Length: 41
Image: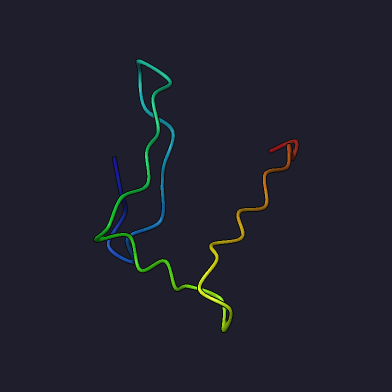
């Protein structure tokens, strides 16, 4: 689920995904860097 700014939001099944329409951009060398971290809300 996304909000109006297309950010992932909490949902009842705790499932999140990112895809080709998520606005991800490739690095200059053609790689994709993904950072994952946990925050307390």
